[in-house]
Image (cartoon, rainbow, N blue to C red):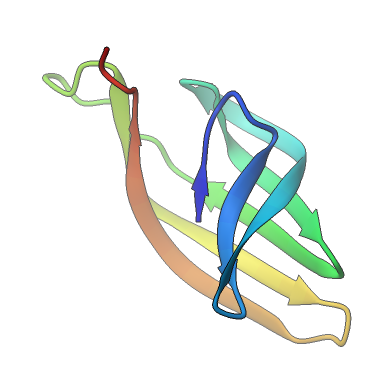
Length: 93
């Protein structure tokens, strides 16, 4: 999953293809344009992203995501929970 703070969606690999999945809500702490809780919906798939941010000295314009989860729920009742980690970074110009 990859998202940009300026867009209202995320690129997600679904069925082996990149899909642009629209964000429908964001709540909680905001760091560099990202909410700690975000929700996305695409064709009967609901994604709930919950992440923690850690701003570290020396990182500059970014934050580490040491822990988080993506909960994927489908219309047929199946639900998957995936642990995640990552990084928020700005493009240097």
